[in-house]
Image (cartoon, rainbow, N blue to C red):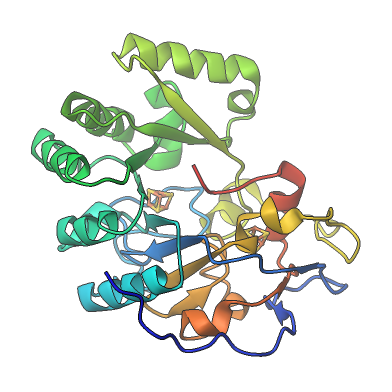
Amino acid sequence: MTAQPLPPPDDTDQPVSLGGDTPQPGPVLPFAALDTLWLQITGTICNIACRHCFITCGPKNDSHPMMDEEHVLETLREAYDRGVREYYFTGGEPFMHPKILPIIEATLAQGPLTILTNGILITDTLAARLAEIAQASEYSLDVRVSIDGTTPEENDPIRGKNTFHRILAGAQALHRGGINPVFTVTTVHARLAESEGRAEFLALLRELGFTRPRLKMIPPFKLGREVRRGGGYDAAEYLVEGDLMDGEEHVLQCGSCRMVTAKGVYPCPILIEEEGARMGDTLADALKPIRLDQRACYTCHVEGFTCST
Ligand code: SF4
Ligand code: SF4
């Protein structure tokens, strides 16, 4: 592939507000570089409707529609020219996209890819095809499978009836096909955030045949459907100038990533339903410092959290 001339980034270095409702201006996070590109491949369309989904995805929510294949390929070309080093696909449920396999192939031709999925649509046939595509690439393919408990009693009230077994079946299909998934667990059950909960999870995964189990814990973001389940942010949960450490742009993912959806470009995967956080139509509009004035930014800062694997 040959790098093409690009439209220059917007020439102002003025920080962009993310349109939050914090009572004081949020701190400014410099933009380090566009290392990571997220694609909201299936928008907010998902085959399930989890009670903690911070972007309220579900079978009927098309507030962010699916990205069409041409838009994805165009974005990939621009990302390559801008030197992006890694790619993430999320939704919604990425495996609902009718062109997901050619899109995965095109992405793996230019960099490593992680796909976030609930695993339910993954069959042995699909897993074998994914493994084949991954083997043909010089870059890595990681698949992150979300699950929210070590039993159906813990998981299903959050993710929906019978989802525990269906998620594990998809993850086991991946494993049989030669892809070792990363299990992602939102710590909606407090015990799962503690080392005992993690140990229990790892023991369950070993028992199920995952010889090298991988686990990533994610704090709940008090946005979207999670507000109804667990409550919203407290009045005191926001960031102000002076709260960030030196170099935090290298810790918080939004210092080096952007999220492209069918509706425009956002700083990160967490804020796509917050209209004020839309940074523009193109990547060039969005490669600038941001003012962390959304309350969800408090979670990232306090938890030292990044969505990256
Ligand atoms: S949390 Fe993930 S799997 Fe659940 S509704 Fe949201 S996008 Fe779908
Ligand atoms: S929610 Fe987190 S990742 Fe998104 S802009 Fe705020 S600090 Fe950055």
